[in-house]
Length: 68
Image 1 (cartoon, one colour):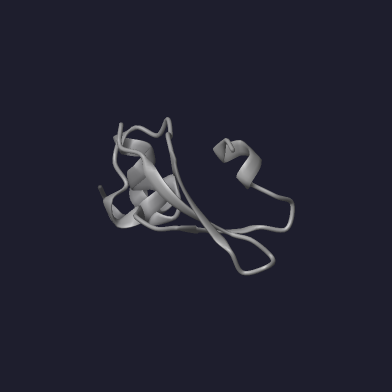
Image 2: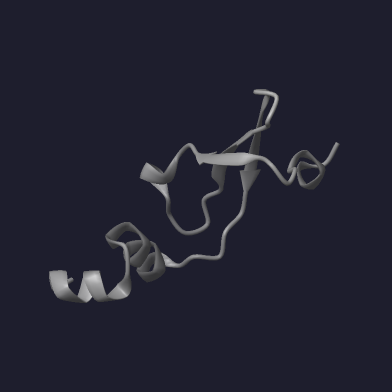
């Protein structure tokens, strides 16, 4: 079964390792199914370092306001 096939309409997701979110590093996602079962998948992302900082601050404007 591919990771794509593990994701269903009524799933919720937990991002396990956002504290180490960085360019070129996969993220681990916990897929929680309506029956309580869980699948763990690794995903790629295309965020670069400035985009990750924006994400961590909540927005680019928050980062600008902070003076970074």
